[in-house]
Each structure stands twice: as structure tokens, then as C-alpha cells.
Length: 322
Ligand code: HEC
Ligand code: HEC
Image (cartoon, rainbow, N blue to C red; front, top):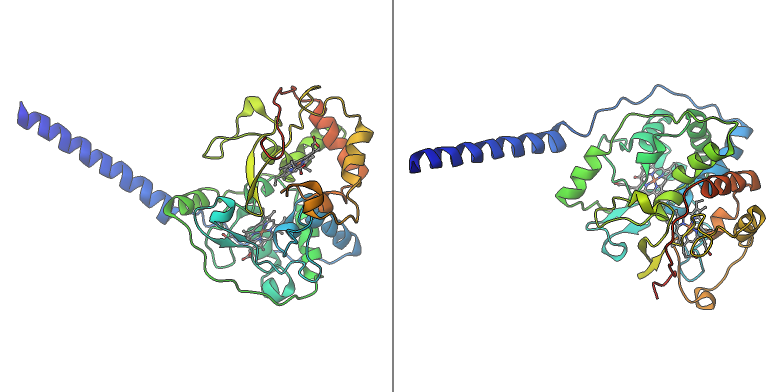
């Protein structure tokens, strides 16, 4: 009896070890996927540079994360003279159990990267040196981007002033973080949207600009509660203090259901060229008000159309959680 039980246990142990070993090898040795560097030469046209400027600053937040920000001003606008310089640190202060620094994406930092290497970094999250970057940089949604949008961003990055800065000191990732980073390296999956449908256009923007991610509450593993989508209340750190995202669902009482399209657009445009001290507002935010103020009225109208077409979620939140 005992021998049989022990044998059984040993077998289970061995099986466990094999399964564990298998997972370990898969996630740490086989992954990340070795996705090829596309053979690519992006022609710099004025149209592309202008579109890339708009996308990288107003829509996708590239510049917001890859510059120094003035945390004394509401929405932490980019400090003049640091555009693309990188150096934003993501560590315990913002709830990350390691340390990752955004790199210099001006020609000073990535001037020697090929267009294909930049392309692969944006959509697949693979660094020039082949390792998986940590998905604070949301390449796991950039994989939906249309290639032309990525070409525009690359064209724009090539025109930035080469601001000195970096390379920044080494990354510190816990094993779990390496696991997450390695498993998020995925092939591109450009989102085919019906361009004649404002709701579809708005959804594309809301996903890629991060609106839906930040405005949906999530569990501690950052898995969103889909039945609360757009209902706000996701806690995050802004300059060391917790701030909670607003309910931007169509709910009349706790969300923005009573806002007209005009109200919505005006709310964003109100921050154009404004520098408001945090003390005047009473809290700091992660919502990039100064950058989003540049969103075009048509893009804002599309996002609004998408928000209003989703089920309303009743959830009362205040930015400071009180
Ligand atoms: C939410 C913050 C965030 C956003 C938004 C973001 N990035 Fe990043 N990016 C990072 C961080 C952090 C790293 C470093 C990741 C690592 O080392 O694991 C990084 C790395 C990179 C790199 C590799 C060079 C380097 O070492 O930093 C490139 C190139 C890059 N990002 C370009 C972009 C572009 C282009 C966009 C917009 C389409 C973008 N990023 C949006 C945070 C961000
Ligand atoms: C990095 C996280 C983050 C992202 C990305 C983000 N937001 Fe926010 N948003 C917040 C937080 C936090 C607040 C609450 C504090 C404040 O007012 O800034 C907020 C506030 C708002 C408000 C104010 C609501 C009210 O009741 O006053 C609106 C509207 C809004 N966001 C819409 C959007 C849209 C649309 C997008 C995408 C273009 C977006 N947000 C992207 C975090 C984010």
C-alpha cells in the first residue's frame, strides 16, 4: 500500500517537475518569439511626418512616456527641451515590482536603429538587441496598428532634435515580469475596421490610445472586469499619490451619459496650451490632458460615438477615491 502510494506521489512529483520544467523552458528559453526585423525603408514625406507628430503626441502617448514630465502641473505636460529623451522611471513608486526606464527615442538614442528595428519594437515589443521589452509600453495593443500609421511615427521620430540622454541604467525585472514580457511578444494583427462607421473608428482609437484600458477597473493581476468596461475606478499612481480613473461610460448619473458630443470635445480642448498648477486642482492625474487637447475634433467625436454606443455602467468614482 505504502509503496504504491509513494510511487504514486513520486510519479505526481515527477509529472509536476516535468510540467513546471516544460513551462519554464517555454516561457524563459523558447520565448520570446524570434520575430524577424522587417526589411523596410520609410520615406520621409511631409504628410507622414505631420501625421506621425499627431499620432505620437496626441493619440498614442509615445512622447508622453518618452520625455521628462513636469509633475507640478496638472496632467504632467512634457518639459520643454526633453521631447523623446526618455528617462521616465517605472518602479515601486508607480506600483511596478522592478525598474524599467523608457529609452531615448530621438536620433541621439535610436539613430542607429533601422526602420525595421523600430517597427518591430513598436508592434512586437522586441528590443533591437532581441530581448522582450516590458509591456508598460503597450505594444500588446500597438500590434493592431495599421502599417501606414507606424511608418508615420517612424518618419516623425527621425525628425526629432537629437536630445542627449541615456542609455539609462539597467532594467530590473522579477521572474514574473520576465514571464509576462516574454509571453506578450506577438505577431502583428492589424485591426481591419469599417472606416465608414464612427463607432468602429472610435473603438480603434479608444483601445490604442489606452482610454479603455485606464478607464476599466481591473483585478490585482490587471485583468479588466469586462462587465464594468469604461466604468472607471482603476487606481494608479500619479507622482506618488493614488488617482482613480473616471467613469466614462454612457451612464447618466455616474458616467458621462448626459454630456453632449460638444461637451465632450470642449472638455478636452479646454486644456489647449494651459499650464495649471496641481495645487489649483488638488490632485495629480495620469490622464494626459495637455497632450489629448491636440486630439482632432473628428477623432474626439468618434471616441464619443463609441463610448455612447456601449452599455452604461453605474459606478460612482472620485479621482481621489474619497
Ligand atoms: C506607457 C508608457 C509608454 C508608451 C505610451 C510608449 N512607450 Fe516606448 N517604451 C516605454 C518603456 C518603459 C520602454 C522600455 C521597456 C523595457 O526596457 O522593457 C519603452 C521602449 C521603447 C523603445 C525601445 C528603446 C528604448 O530602450 O526605450 C522604443 C523604440 C519605443 N519605446 C518607442 C515607442 C513608440 C514609437 C511609442 C508610441 C507608438 C511608444 N514607445 C509608447 C514606455 C512607453
Ligand atoms: C493612463 C491612464 C489614462 C488614460 C490612457 C486615459 N485616461 Fe481619462 N482619466 C484618467 C484618470 C486617472 C482620470 C481622473 C482624473 C482626471 O480628471 O484627470 C481621467 C479622467 C477622464 C475624463 C474626465 C471625466 C469627468 O467626469 O470629468 C474623461 C472624459 C476621460 N478621462 C476620457 C478619456 C479618453 C477619451 C481617453 C483616451 C483618449 C482617456 N481618458 C485616456 C486616466 C486615463
